[in-house]
Length: 358
Image (cartoon, rainbow, N blue to C red; front, top):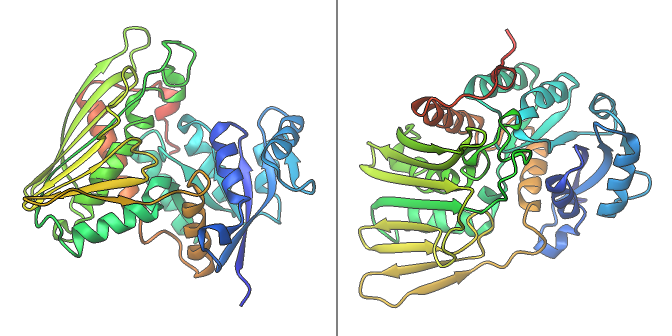
């Protein structure tokens, strides 16, 4: 049987869009995938069609790939099945609404939206229109993550999990115009870097079968940048009462995480540690009590964004409206946790970003 082909439209032409598109264009057989394939049929830039044409050349897409100078033109292209939204998360809400109202399936970069109300509105619209919607947290779909969850949740290699600490720190130049420092672009550590340590905690604790997908109790602290007031250092305690377990999330944009360990999972029988980077891990180390450490390696071909694209293709092929591995309800729970972190620190974005359609 011929592989199912998913036809992509790329909305925005920045760095993340380039990385994702290059992965789409890789031969799926190189990652032992034979049931789905991808075509990039259109690209749109908000600035000009010329920029979109440059992007097509930069990523090595076919010359026949359509290049548009507006997002509205992209969502009207009848040859596009799904839109990949690669704008800053300050624009995800409006871009997702545009795409869904154009009748397109949506693969939206993280963070999903600015707040939970926006996320709920986007989900509601997708469900009303019976259109596939997906938050693109690529790390969740790595074979490594799937294998590690099996060890923890099915094989119970650590017995009961007691605690997960996940960290992502990366130093950025203190430029008030940089998106991470710019509140008008949803800047700050939480919604950009914090997504990754949150992902690790949610995969190992929130998705633990014994937790029954019960949302955590959130306690947090933020240290804001003196220049722009966005969160520079963010620390979040996520307590899971059903598990009697704790997740600790730390994220910052000033100092780099220690490379030897960015995630530590501790349980009754020992621990699992993941070295740098938490967003693209290629190995983890299991250390059981009174045993030698065991390294598990999962090399990545390409950047690793193709696995989430493959998941989208299979879901749409099978008539699903959301991912079983990362359901929309979990995206909303995470956005609600982000909201609570910001609420506890009295941290709001400009009203134009927090706005939700009536």
